[in-house]
Length: 116
Image (tube, rainbow, N blue to C red; front, top):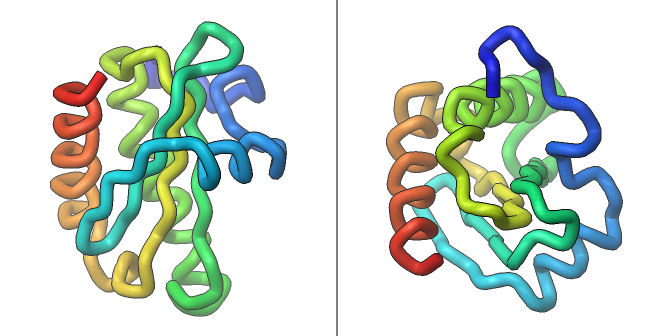
């Protein structure tokens, strides 16, 4: 994805039905601060979603984690396999920082690529 381009709806998993489908039928890759769920894409292009619960922290921390994940995936979108992918933030995600989440996202994407 071009660094100047934002996340349009065609590249995001926004419907709760899509998130639920991944929770029920997707493959799961756990990490220390994130869990990745992936399933074959329904629309023929990679789509990414995020789930950040209140266990992560207050609104400021949750939004910070969401912004970090969105930015990390913006730079890695072109290398994604054609999958629907959801990242679920665990309670320690806010304290991991951008660098910690970047290392974890890279590790999860590597595991995803090996399995695909």
